[in-house]
Image (cartoon, rainbow, N blue to C red):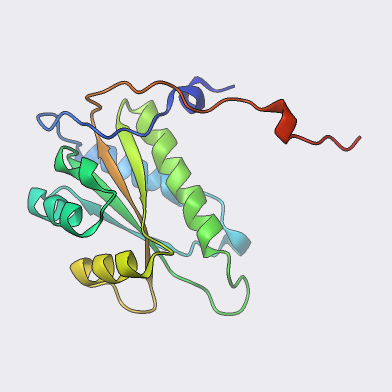
Length: 167
């Protein structure tokens, strides 16, 4: 298995003296846009944030994004639900884009933490308001990004009893 997959962790403490560069953010966003999506619909947009004042505002409105107090960047994944074909697949599509960001960040030596917004209506409303996101788009999540200032233990593992083989 790929070592990046095995070593990736959710980081909640970052080194605030080591900023994430625009070049690094561009690599993360490029990785996101290479994610698969239903019918190649690409139902996403992204907001990259490095402004300390905005990162701090997010910590005030999202109860589980407190790690942004030390993170030096964040990416907000914004879903654009589709009408008609392929309606209803934006959560899977945006989830795939998010996972690509997390893995690319790990490869770049950056830490990340995925903070859910969708489907919690109060979080959607707060983040939509902060970033002036139109009503037809949905703030899907916030990804905290920075240089890790902690090394959490691995939490994932293979569980053979959760697998059924049909041969």
